Length: 499
Picture 1 (tube, rainbow, N blue to C red):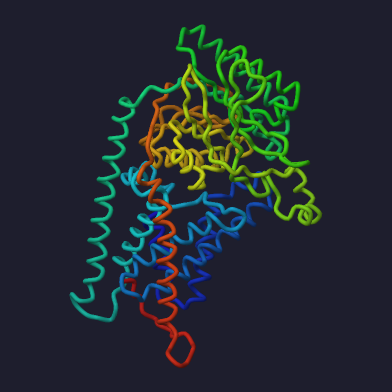
Picture 2: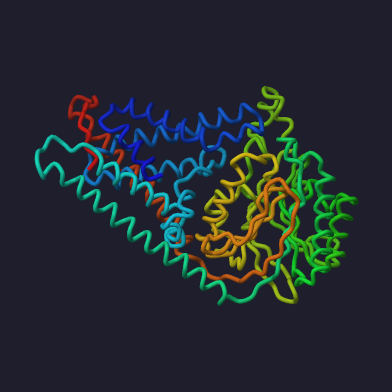
């Protein structure tokens, strides 16, 4: 990604602002076509529409970079422009789409550990700055001759090497330190993860067999318990079912209630159930995590998903759009977002453990993930249903984002999905175990209890909104410098200066 960032910067260097805007848009079409084309499985028009819109953020990035290229310290301002565009894309419109960020590419690189210190937003800024320094080192100098013309490129190259050396050293130390810390942490619950299996070949209708999906998770729970007991393996302290393990409200539907309570009774262990629940209003629903203890007639604590998928879980301007696009009726009842942090007080073996719960798409949202550890989550669990995207790149992208979140929060993360890539990720981002895609399976993991809030979680919003402010100011300065005094028209500078 460092050369990729540099490529856009070199592409727009010396161009007119309108050309930089257009080239940035073309760059964005390439970027997002190769990363999020899997959206077509929901409905084929969704992919070109989303790609075309997301490319607008790249267009703004290209234009913004061009506006600051003639300023001193241009690589720094350009990196802030890139960061600001990422933050904008993660918030606007309709809640944003932060799926494609530079930070997610840091996993499995020497700088991965810096997620713990500067968060996802900071790592995106770091990679953007590295790309800008590379572009400055490669760009033709101004019209000066001799050593004076080479000096800016030499300074940029040395700064790039120093920046990556420091980031790599800090990152590698953090990952190895996290490995050693896990064994020293207090012992947490043993979690049995259930992956019940869903027919992914049904595409956007994969979760349409609501009752059979719950049957699958009950059956897989029974099989897992039998296997665990037959092998003499340690009994679990709790069981984790994924998002949409029941698409029928188990509190209000008798048959589904019986399936869940049967699983709890057989296991004699509490289950964290992923359910679709009715309400809060008529013809509305919520995606919910339910803590269901042994002997209880219902959940004792719940969390409602906060970040919903537009056109997947809810339809904006529904009354108008459904008439224009009838296929949107398949989205079903309108989902309503939750409003409280995803922390569940779970009573396990006589003690209360605070579980940070993140539901699928929410992984891409900084505030939602960060709120779990800010509110005392000792372990983080991800409940996900990505059966619709079986055999596409989406489950693997989500898995990488989850690994980044484990490093950032300093917590083990347990993942339970309906049919794709469940497992355990360590606080250093290492994968302890992972199931196969498009299968039914189960796993049992002994967890450790984390505590505290990492520097990355604390600093990420400060770095993010700070970079937005810096980007806005530097772009305004760049625009002002391009306007000739008293004439009100843009100057046309053909230099390729990046420093």
